[in-house]
Image (cartoon, rainbow, N blue to C red; front, top):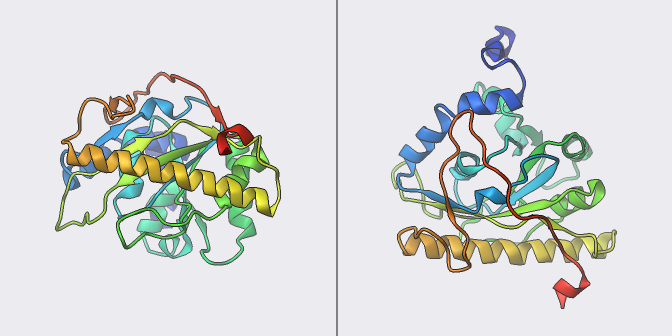
Length: 255
């Protein structure tokens, strides 16, 4: 990693938490130029402190920077191993805290890294479907995100993204909707419990994605039909005050 060896990280003091405010000067504006008119909703639902798992559905290559543009917190994304191997791209992503995980197989090191990060108070970003969805709507959710949440007793922040069809040639407006943080304390640990928690997360991602799609169709109203307010992109060096709390998913919620 040539640029890292040259010490470029000293520009922002080193470390991903310092890199995010620095990179907001160009990543956020560049993202909104690539998808002009894009909006976010419910950004104040991302906890202001403490560990969390941000779980978003995945429809286009724009999704990681788009979600990051509206997130108050630095997001340490899980990225597919192949991205980490791309010269320069992989290096830049590691500056933001992204870490590789191998898809389609057990990656104990990747999961260990994710658990370590949330236990230290960071927010990790996961696309729990495992890959980009090609048909325009959320797909089945894998249990990794909820397993980390349940192991480390941190919330999952669900995030619905409507970006289907976006490409550098089709610079359409997209939408991000953050949901209330979820805990799964009422769901038993173990294989069946993880599958049940994943099902609950999938249902919430689908609900938020529908709200995002409605917002795009309606021209991005000031609030969604459930009252979620529109959010401004997070400016460099600025954050948002947290409102609301963590929703515990119990047996009552599942009935």
